[in-house]
Length: 375
Image (cartoon, rainbow, N blue to C red; front, side, top):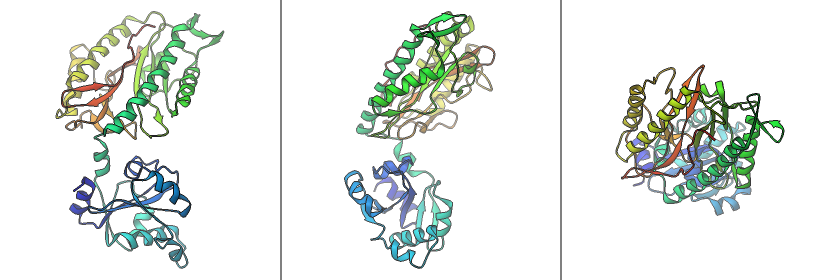
């Protein structure tokens, strides 16, 4: 019995039901159908999943989706709408006519639809079965993610090359006679990504004092002798899969504190990578790096190492599993990041991030990009 069927049976439900667009990673995973409009998916115990779509989408859905397909007309929605004008109630009645008297829904199921569905069915909330299933990647998924990572490294190379070739005037980096800005670096990386069918949002190119705040995206001219943190996590538009990597570079001469932080950071990343293995707790891997930093005089509280060591990557850039205090046993086939960082106001921040696969033997690192501090 598949895991989703097991969850349905254990809950005593007749079916698992979702209502979302393919922007929802669970929906895209279960159906392989890509659309910006929400649609219905349901799965009964030990049966193939079914999607309910509009008639205009049936042709494309039949080509893309791994689920069985019925139209809203076949599911009776037009007839229901003759007497029920509330769209949520009409959709709920349509769903109820297909699935039975008790349904299991994901935690992010629309509240209005759940309330309407409650008039026809008993509604139970699942604890997160689909994200747990998605945690272990297939060979095809891993192949897709390796492809995105190669594109990501090419884009990172564009960024580092621009910084390396920049000239310095009064402490500011210049390119082609103009200040080299965070925005220019992002534009150059994003343009390269688009050429390869990938997109990125919230890309981080922070410099100097900005780097002391882990997710400060960065703005304005980049400075010489200061750390520049570049964190890039694009998505392949065709497959929906992400990659994720971070590098920290300095054009010029970094402060001694930054040099020391970076040296410790590189060791911490390698330590974390060496601890990753199927069957090992994500919390244990995280704690090993916390202990390492403490031995080297760096905190893991409100400054220093202030975030988890890593996270799963797939159809979302942040998904299971977790390398942090709440991390559970790692599974072979998970794709995770290892990304220690150190952050101090008044000094700056440094971060390194690799992505790879958890195996029974260790960490299969997809990341091949150099990690030199000075460029």
